[in-house]
Image 1 (cartoon, rainbow over the protein chains, first blue to last red):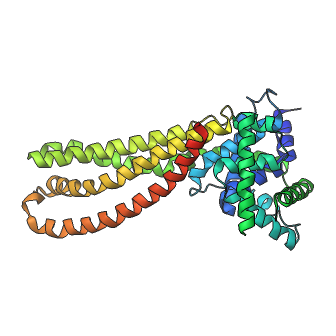
Image 2: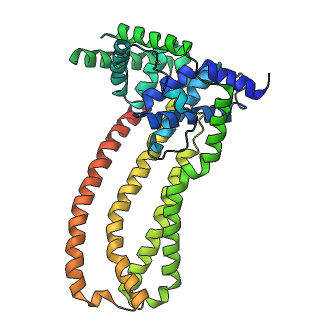
Length: 162
Length: 198
């Protein structure tokens, strides 16, 4: 299998993951499209250096989350995002209104967290084990556990307030 | 809504996203190619344009520095030249530092620490820049006037009577706004750094 073929295969398999990361780290559609494209570009750029040293998902989350942080400062300078509109804008076209409203509330709660907490909660919701979260984030497993229980507390109190 | 419900909604959304794959091979490769060709103008365009204007002005002042024939005009000239060269160099250097972060090798924690530190430094430079630019307003006008029209503005008190109060009003409001913005952003950044470096 050629490089392009295996790369596009991995991206297609994980397009939902990229979409979710871009949603929690951006505030508007334009920034989301921009970040989506930047993540795909950074993954392509680093595809050669990724030689199965870690799991595909570990590499992917690490690059995508790091790109999201690096992109935070550049949100006002939009570049050309041709082609991506048809992908990002239509991700939610099949949702029913009630589900979409509930999803909005979930995103509202996540958006209130800080940049580190957003990453941790995303990995937790994605069903990652503490060990893999630790590999992606560089925090120790114990630290991951402590932080996640703090985030849960934080979310719980915010949910109760609302 | 409780945490279990959040988890359920997230899983449901993930399942739906899984079913509606939108990307094609062509689109993925187009995204990477578009991005590659956009890369250079996107990253440093505005910063570079600003720096070039500052450098050109600094060169102009440097070439004409011999026209500044009093100690105070010379002092104003030196400050103006230093400001026009140093501030863009430091800002571009810090932006470069942020861009050089290794996205593949660094962990999420290292990226956040690196990003937050660089951002804090950049904000500090911008804040210093805001205050110094008021001094620049004070120094560049006499320098310009001397070089272009051979007039020593320090000997013309009328201009200062109008110019200084306007500058003072601007300085008051602008620096208050700048300080507020800076404080809010750096406070939250400092909290993350403290948390991560424990």
